[in-house]
Image (tube, rainbow, N blue to C red; front, side):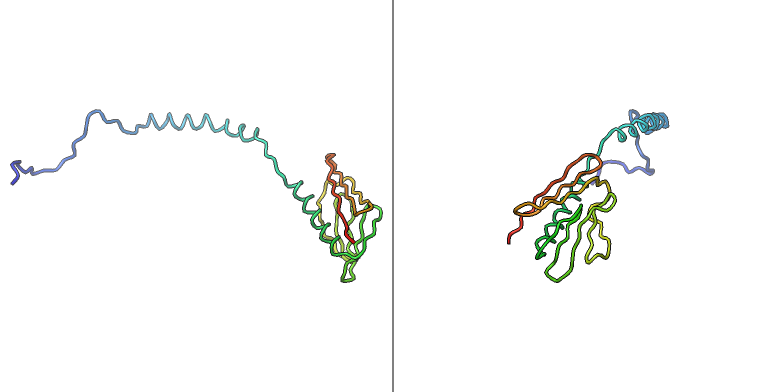
Length: 150
């Protein structure tokens, strides 16, 4: 059996070298937090975010253009426009309209394939296909040559 004598009361023993969370330490933490928050705003403003959205939109336009070219039996190039005569008898048009490039089927509708920022769009017939050159208002050039197999 136990040789200790049972105590008739319960208590919690505390050590004298323990330090608790004081209001002074809380005020110090809040002060440091409020001093650093304004600097975080300046740091996030100085970061520059690069996006590939415009490059992807031009590459997507080239894919749509290629698909319509492959589905056509014949094509005609006009002043800043290309007219595809599709297998099903429809006429698909890609043209520069104001500062966008739009796609129309049989002269109806208005599907925007490149939204804004287009300065010039040139469609040129070459001996083995079509050359498309697009110049943006920022001065960037996008050029693609499409080969037509007949």
